[in-house]
Length: 181
Image (tube, rainbow, N blue to C red):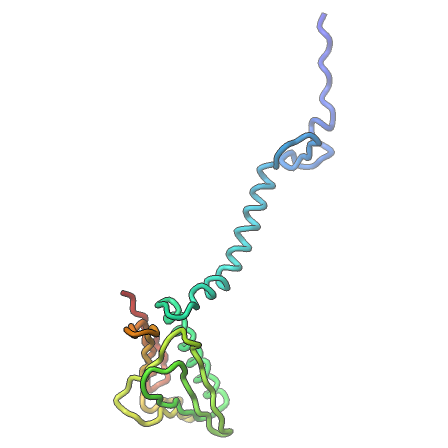
C-alpha cells in the first residue's frame, strides 16, 4: 500500500507570511520579482527628480550653444519678474543700454534709486539691438516700455554665434526666440 501524502503545512502555503509574492524563504538565493521592480521604481523616481538639477549643471558649461540658450531663458524669466515687480510696486525703471557684447544686463530703479544686475557668468554674451540709444524707460502708470528693445544672445568666442533673442514690446510683452543650426 501507498503511504499517505504529507499534508501541506502553513509554511509551504504561505498563510503566515503574507502575499505569496513577498514570501521570505530561508534558503533562497535571489530576490523576488516584486522586490526588483520596487527598486527599479524607486531609482526611476529619484533619477526623474535629479534630472533638472543635473541637466542644468551639464548645460551650464560656458561656451556652448545649450548654455547660451539656457541663459537666454533665464534672462527672459528675470525680465518678466522684474517688470511684474515694477508694476506691483509702482516703480519706474530703466534698462541700461550697454554698448557691444556684454556679460550682464543692468536695470536702474527709481523711487528709491538703485541698480540691479543680471550676470551671465560667461555662459553667453548679451547685445542690445535697437535703433535708439536712449534708455529704455518703464512707466508703471501705463505699464509700458519706451522704446521697445531686443536683446540678442551669442555664444562666447571668436564667432559669436547668435542663439536666441528676447524682444520686449512697448506693452511689456517679453518673447523669447531660440535659433537652432
